Image 1 (spheres, rainbow, N blue to C red):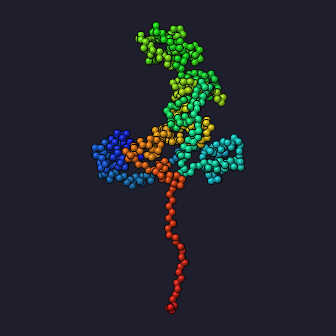
Image 2: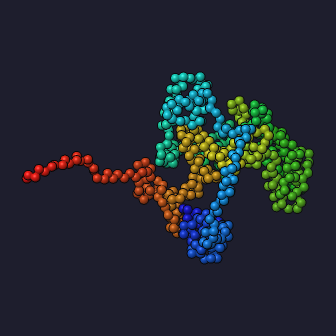
Image 3: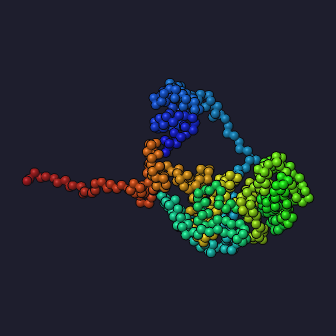
Length: 504
C-alpha cells in the first residue's frame, strides 16, 4: 500500500505515471528522494526525468561528492569553554505553571487512596462520578469502601484484553440488534406535523455518512431569559419558518389585461406577522422577476414588460414560489414544552443561520445532519453527533448497546479529520489489504486492479487470513511459541580413584 501511496503522491505533484511507477518500484518514498544523490536517481530514470522529478517535489540537486563536504564541523574549544562559563538562567518567580488537570476533591482523594490500596487505578472521570454520587447520598467509611471495591471489580471485568478483536465484537454488538429494528417514522405533535426517520433506516443513514438525511430536523433551544416565554418562542418559530407567497396568498392570472394579481389572505398574514409592504418588498427583491409591481388596495398587481402569454406564465411561477420571510431550508417549525421550557422542532435544517440568531441558545441547539455539524463545528462535534444519534436511535427501539462499541465506530469514521462512510466509498474501500476489500464488495474489480498495479497483501488482518485458510492473528493465533528442551543433563557422581597395589 505504501508503494501505491507514493505513486499517487508523485502524480498529484505533477510527476508522470511512468516515472512515479519506476521510483516506487525502486522502493523510494518522497522523503527519501530529497536525500538521494543525483547519480543514484539517474540509474533508475533518465537525467531529464530526474531533474524534472526534483523540481516537482521541491528538492535540491546534489552529487555524491558533496556528501563528504556535508559533515558537521566540530565546535571550537573556545566556544565550548564559553558555554561552560555561561551561568544558568534564573527562573522568574512571577511566572506560574498552569494546571491542566484540576486537583482532586477530598472525596475523590479518599476514593483514589482506596483504589490504590487495592493495587489498581481508575480514570479521573469515574472518580468524579463516584465522588458526586457519594456526596449526594452521603456515603462514607466502610460503605464507600465496599462500593469502590465493587466498582473496581466491574471496571476490571470490562477491560479489553490485548489482541482482542474489538472491531468484530463492536460490529456484532451493533449489527445483531440492528437486524431487529423496525422501519418506522416518529411524528411530532400529531400525524400532520413533523416526521423523523428512526429505526434501521436512520442507523443506515448514520453509518453511511449521508450528506442530507431523509428527514432533516433541528432541535432549537432558547436562551435562559426566554426559555419560559411562549410569545418569544412563537416569534422565533414564525421568524425562521420558511414562508413563500403561495402559503399566505392566492395568485391569479388576468389574461385579458396581461397581468398577475396577488390576493393576500388577511388571517394568514396576520398569523405569521407579515404585512403587504413586506410582500411588495420581497417581490421587488426577486431578481428573476422582470415586471412592474403596483399595489391595488389590499392586492398586488404585476404587469409584464413584454406582452406575451409565455412570459406571463414564467412570472406566475416565479411569483408563486417567492420567499417572503424565514430561513432557507426550514419548511416548518413546531413548539413543544419540555421540562418547563419551550423547545422548537423544525422540519429542515440550517445550523449556520440558527446559531447566529440572538434569542437562540447556540450551545444546545443541534441538528440531526452529521455532515452539517462537521461543516459548521468541526470533526470532534461530528464524532459526538454520530455517538449521540446512534445511541438515541438504538435506545428508542429499546435495544441496549455498550456505548464503547458505538464510540469505536465513530472513531473509525472520523479518525483522519473527515467523516467517512462505512462502506466501499469509505473505510472498507480504504483498507490496505486487497483481500479484505474484495471480501466486502465488487470482488472482481478489486482483484483486477490489484493484479494490474502489482499490489501486495501482507495478510495482517482477520478477513484475509480466513480467506486463505490461515490462523487468524488473534487469541491463540496471535503468538507463536517454540519449545526446544535440548539434551537432558544429569549430574553424575564423581568417580572415586582406586589405587592399585600392583597385584592382579
